[in-house]
Image 1: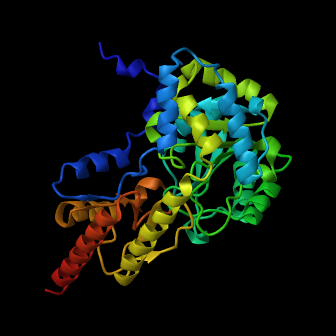
Image 2 (image 1 turned 90 degrees about the horizontal axis):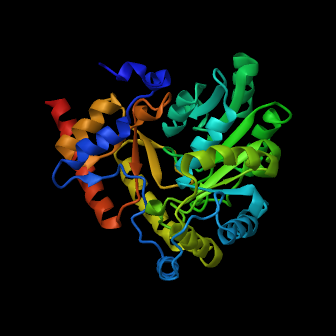
Amino acid sequence: MEMTKYLNTQLAGVKASDILAFANFASGIPNIVNFTVGEPDFNTPEHVQQAAIRSIQENHSHYAPSNGTQELRQNVSDYLADKYDQHYTPEEVIVTEGATEAIYTAIVSVLNPGDKVIIPTPTFPLYIADVTVAGGQPILVDTSATDFKLTPELLAQTIDREGPSVKMLVLNYPGNPTGVTYSQAELDALGDVLRDKPIFALCDEIYSELNYDHPHASLTKSLREQTIPISGVSKSHAMTGWRIGLLCAPQNLVNELSKIHQFTITSTATVAQDAAAEALGNGQDDALPMKAEYQKRRDYILDTLNELGFQTAKPSGAFYIYTKIAPDLEQDDVKFAYDLAKSGHVAAVPGSYFGPGGDHYLRLSYATSMAEIKRGMSQLQQYVADQRVSQTV
């Protein structure tokens, strides 16, 4: 009997990840320089590692409270207040299995079948998949004409067009794949559009520590009652494998959101929570040396891309560059990326994998060493030169 036809029908609307498929393809090419992975290449800070060791030695091997240990939730509360002027009590914090689970928990908790979710694109495809599985309808809004930012005018037009079934707006800032972020004034203006409407704002702020040009802004400051901010320690403290995410919301919302969280994972690993408590309690500035190095890498890649005729908006956060392929080269970004990997031994993700507005673009992650970046940029230069010569023959 063919059992797949009896699965959740929403799965038919979810594609397997093109990004992972491309990364798997590229990983099989010898000596390739990999710009696909959005993961810090730094090690978890030593004091955080030692906190985890102590946790193991002290036999912290039992279930933690479902929403997180008191120490970690208190440190989250203090950290957000001290660093970002965001104010949540420990009881308004849920410790999740990475930001991924936090996003899933928020979306599944909010949506009813048929509800619409506005998602500015290009964006990381996870949000689209979660909305689809929850029975919602992703409304993809191309922001390529407005410097990859959702404007208040575009948001208002979309809400008016889609009607009262709009239940949520998803924002990611600084953004993956573009590295673009918002000022506080820009977020306040978006908040004015949403205010007093029955629409939640899910704000993925996982890259909050990697803002290069100005302090991190947040919609929570102007629209706290409707906003669900997401963060974690994966990017700030190079702790992707520890799987600690953070979800905050007003107490009445947390009481409801925690239900999905409880029945999905029960609780995150106690040892990992102890490590995260140390990271946020005594390592609030651990990201600063990483951020300084990321900026050097960003600028080196930007200089090379500009010299080659690629058009790139300077990213102001995260560790991604979203660049438009030079107009005299192959404009199909999927064909370009696959040939660049095979012939040029450089792996950059096709921009169209991130939704409308991504055609003709590539995403490069600079979460890799400067030595690898220099090697990759040299190979890109050679590949582009070869392509241009072949076009003149």
